[in-house]
Length: 339
Ligand code: SF4
Ligand code: SF4
Image 1: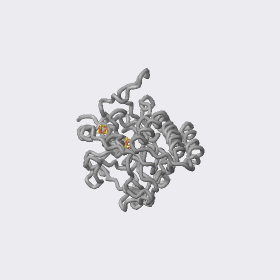
Image 2 (image 1 turned 180 degrees about the vertical axis):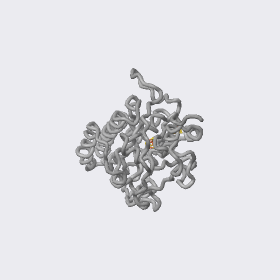
Image 3 (image 1 turned 60 degrees about the horizontal axis):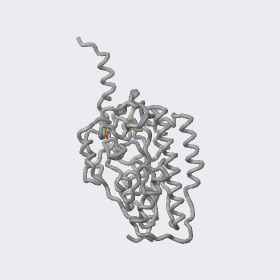
Image 4 (image 1 turned 90 degrees about the vertical axis):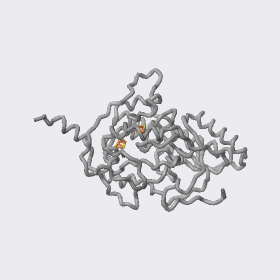
C-alpha cells in the first residue's frame, strides 16, 4: 500500500445520495419538528465548521496493534458503543470523490429503544438526530486526539454528505452483518445504531468482518418486510446488487418506495425497531419499561417516485410495483363482507 497516493472511487461506485433532488421529487421537505431543527442547526453550524484541523508537528509512531488499541479505548471512553478499523478500497468511495487517507476508523453509537416504541413518530425522529449530533461530537473529539498525535485525518460525519460509504466500511470493520432492511445488525446491540467515520493514514491494525449467522437468520425472517409501511423491503436477495462480505447476494430496498414514506412520515425507521434479530435482547433497557414490539402507525404509502436521474442515484429494484400494497389489501378486506 502506497500511503502517499490518494484513493480514487471505483468506476462502479454509487453516486452520493442526492437529498435535495429526492425531496424535490416528493414535493419538498415537509417534516418540521423543533427538536430535530435544533440538532440540525447545531450539526451544520457548530460541528461542520469544526471538522478540519492541523496535526501537531511531531508524529507519534506506535506499532499498529498498540496504536489501534489505544484509539479504540479512546473512542469508547468518548462514548462510542462500537469501534472498528478497516483499509479503504475504491468501492468504499462515492463516485466522483477521492480520499487521501488509507484507513477508516468506524464508530457506532446506540439509539435508545424507548423512543422507537411507536414508529414513525416525532420521538423516533428526534432520537435519530440526537445520536447524529452526539456521535458527531465523539467523532470530532477523536479526530482532535489523532491530530494531537501528529496525524492528518478527515471527519466523515454520521449525518452524511461524506466521501465514503459508511455501511461497507463498518461491515469490513466488523460491526455486524447486513440485514434484509439494508442496515447493519450488530450481534450485541442489534440494528438501532448510527455510524460515523474518521479517515487517517496513521498505521493501525485492521479488524475483520464477522460471520455471526445473522445473514442466515434474515433469510428465514421477514419481520421488517412484513411491517414496512411502504412495502419497500425485498422477499429475495438481489443477484444484480453485488455480494456482501460473506459472499451472499445483497438485499436491496426499493428506495423509490421507501423515500416517499420516509420523507413524509417522521423519517420512518419502522424497519429498525421491528427487527427480530436475536429475539430483541438488544432492545432491553435497564429501568425503562418497554415493550418488545413497537406500535407501527401505518398510513397508506405515497406513490413511488423514480424522478432522480439514473446516473445520479444508486440502482434499486422496483419491488411489487404492479401489485396493490399488502396493507391496502388488508384494509380493503376488513370492509368486504362475505356473500
Ligand atoms: S424506513 Fe420505513 S419505508 Fe423505508 S424501508 Fe424502513 S420501514 Fe420501509
Ligand atoms: S427483521 Fe428479520 S429479516 Fe428483517 S433485518 Fe431483522 S432479522 Fe433480518
